[in-house]
Length: 170
Image (tube, rainbow, N blue to C red; front, side, top):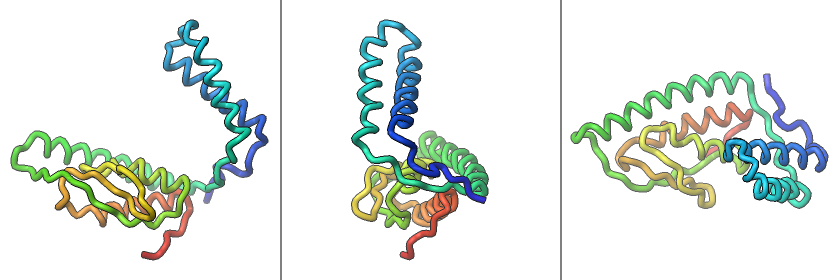
């Protein structure tokens, strides 16, 4: 079963109102509702919302309900395991630390799924995505000797399932 996240591009005036509402709500949260902050917040929110008239609407994508449930279990487990591993490395002088950078050849197509994948890479123990260069993600890792590619491949497969995507062959 799939849920369409963006069935069709809403009209610009609706995107404007949604963006304006989101910006104003965020500003209200950031300023703890201080009325003095609205002098800056309202014009900035209006400018941000006006951008919908010049920027194209986002891509359509589908989320798989089954993929979401599976990903949530995976997310919780990986968060727990990643936290334990990093804590253990930080507290134990015998744990290997050889920080550096590695590249991972990505199979996801450009778009929301790839952006999501890059953001959740930090779930894996000692990893953080740094950038995307052509079809390779650069990662900062705590130990360049860790076998990360199988874990990254599993994560990429989960993200592909979440977004109902077929991965490119590698």
